[in-house]
Image 1 (cartoon, rainbow, N blue to C red):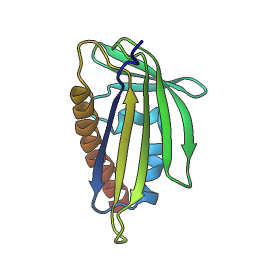
Image 2: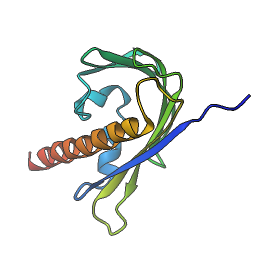
Image 3: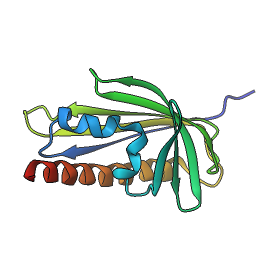
Length: 147
């Protein structure tokens, strides 16, 4: 029996001014994803490590599987959804920009194929969402700095 293919993807977004230490608390707010990810209308805690995220008629429940503040990395998996995911695991990591200014957010995933979707569709959703999330985080941190 042939093993089914898995999808893998990775996106990154650069933030010009905020440092990784400033951005990490925003990424680490596992139950506050809707504050920054433009496509998400609602995100709330349903269990100790499980969040419910919704956008239009689509929803999923995701469990936090690992968080490492020292490495500024968190991982999660989809445990239930109405979008056809059988397996979806993702990691978000915040890394320093390298020159003392700015940082980068990396979002990688591994998933089983989803009917009616391609790996490219999923990768594009992650990339576009991450770019919007980075812009929103920059705006939030800039607003805090101005106050």
